[in-house]
Image (tube, rainbow, N blue to C red; front, side, top):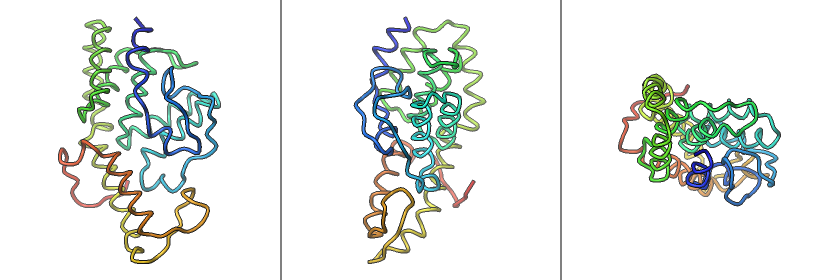
Length: 226
């Protein structure tokens, strides 16, 4: 059964793990957060304040590649705190498969992470959740639903999604004020200052991708930084 999960689910692309890191990689054929041959040497430090979900997802892959699995898991949890759905999916897959050293399988916890990852109705994440439930016992499903209610208070979109959007809105504001011909330097984004308009446009494009399916489903309210 575990092998079936790998064939059906693993090839879902975790694009945040590849596009925001200092290496490019083909779609993995094992658990997405597991090490790959394309080494990551750094993550974009400037993203830690703007798009922390992306930054910590990159750090997770960095640590997995160096066999620091516990650190990597903590980075996935931090990315999940900032509403990164790919990180939540990866946690579900890791706990379901139990194929990462020192990280034992935990079906109820896996199901809860899968459910969180599917909040925005992403087809791949919904399929993963449905397949995981189909291979789980009634007891595991019941336990997962209890876990999910608690985890939503920290990782659900109504909390984490709002948190992430508020953070981005707050941090992008001074960069937007530097546009109209100005230049800005974002740590790790480029070795030299770049045109502010171009940088801000790219950051908004990435944010739109990160928050796809979230905008319109939650109320952001006043800007707040946590």
